[in-house]
Length: 275
Image 1 (cartoon, helix red, strand yellow):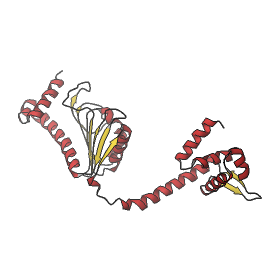
Image 2 (cartoon, helix red, strand yellow):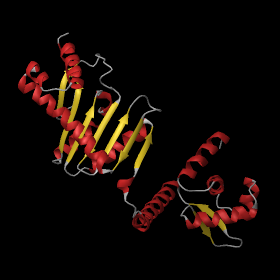
Image 3 (cartoon, helix red, strand yellow):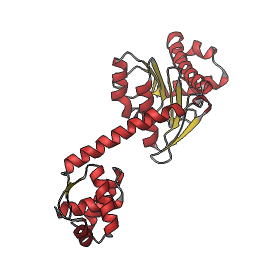
């Protein structure tokens, strides 16, 4: 086996919970078997006490078997079976850890604000929130690309009976999801609208505020803090209500009820719509 291939395999075995020496001994056992611990140590260059310790560990983990003789010899367990054994151990350990430790999470999580870095981690948090929702999901997004990774799951939750409301000043393909939009062209830019912002609230339990700048520097804050949840929900609902009010009243009458800041924004939106 080439050194580069062996190093790669050892690296991935370590990800599955084996030590480097356990992986080395298993690979050596695959190449020559049945074999005594003494001969395996001689072939691999690993100290004999270490080899015997690793062989015993592999036997315990379902990666090797002992052939009783004088002296004892060892054979590897076939790789598919060994991987199933490792997977089974992982699942059992995961269940035990979850059961034993969840009771330790007795702190009030509404006191915490979790900072999340990188687009991948933010997207995973958003997916978790979508799956967690039991009643409703509110989203505000100004660039369709930030929403597209979640279309499939959102449509599934919509079929599950979850109420979904998505607001955007810009128009984009929403894959059948309920979208409240002012139909601004994606090419239009204004400093009054932050295209990188992503707001989300589920039920009355969680909220997330994200800024998608690029893959590595994207940042988000997630919390079960009721103040943040209320603020995010009300921001999205207010934007939807203003849109519906504008559509019902017409832009001229609508501007009469706006404050100066909102009036500037809607004048920009109106100007862009006439282009």
